[in-house]
Image 1 (cartoon, chains in turn purple, cyan):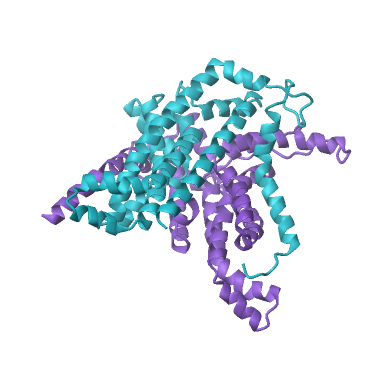
Image 2: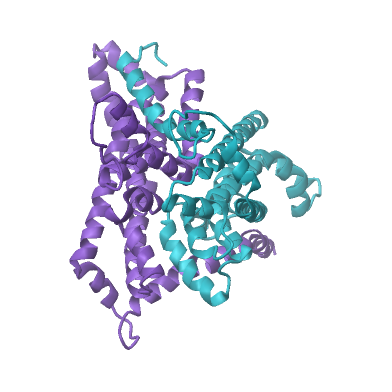
Length: 280
Length: 263
């Protein structure tokens, strides 16, 4: 009797959310899987679309560029995030709150707003170029967007909070008594950092790297606006295949590859840190 | 923390990184008051003209109303579904609890381009392209994780003996939920609701594919950016930044309420 009422309660409580997820989330993804396999001329199931994707030098180039940009963005984010997280982990409560405003406000500000700002800032007759020209640092405008550099500048700004938060979480969890012990045993500040802080923060760094990299792989808006037609990434090819070329099987096979890689990396992240640590 | 000083160089680097994070928002706000026909920095003259254009334009107003309507319904839907599910996930010993929780949180990390084309394909059959209902359902999927994360975080801190006391005094499950749990959970629920609203209100990739001939605010902004740098977008952006700041302030205030009630 008791077990049955628990089941009834569970159904009422979880049922609606599960129903929504099955219909509007799992089913569309499953449909992409079917579409990716139905690429044959006679509609037979097969891996034809995946072969077209991975055997084409054009699409392979796009895939490699997407991975390269994501790796560079990850490296930039980690290098910039570590000092900030380190300062955060030793800051008093007021400093902590101020820095957190700088980290969280951009995190929740619309990506479009920020990309728009970078475009105004980086374009040929944009803010930065005009400024440098007025100072006579340059004669010709620098090419700061419609190339990979512009895409990296925009993406790293968006993903930086996702690097700062996990590294900060791991630094904050280091037991301060370990520092005290190291100091008592005569270790200087650099030695304490190298043998205590750095090794204990590495899981956080790895988690941050995974989280940034995995999100960078699927970015669409920023490469589309800051890279234009010169920096085509995987997400942009997927859009073009669906909207302009109506090649659903090719688009679906690319989407499936992106999805599977993402899921595998996120499972790795979850093992390292746990997703709740970032968003709440 | 241990009386150790942080090296001044670290403060400089931190300052530079925080500047990098803040630059886009600050720039947009300043330029939105520019008086010229083109965006320039620093603006040669100041005016509210782009705000006036935004408030006077029918298409911007329609898109804003559309986004507000969709985000409003998403907030209600995601918050109710997410809260109910969170209670079950934390309080009942369900089989496969971990898997269900993972499923509910997973939309946060699935690339939106992948979900977008999946929805585009399915919605075409279901005739949901261009409908508010289609957008609401899709955005609810994206918003659900934030409600679940916020509400379960508070639930884990909640003292179970209060619920047991209510039950042993004869309150049924429904009464226990509405009169004991809800009053204690509301900061977490409200926080989840705020994030659900922001997620839907700012969402662009899914809206690009399925909003059809009724663009949302982000879709109209995207069109205003992709082929020209429409200065009205600066005025819209500044107002979005203010909405975001207010939302985060409320969420921070709510978090302090939670910390107070759970000791």
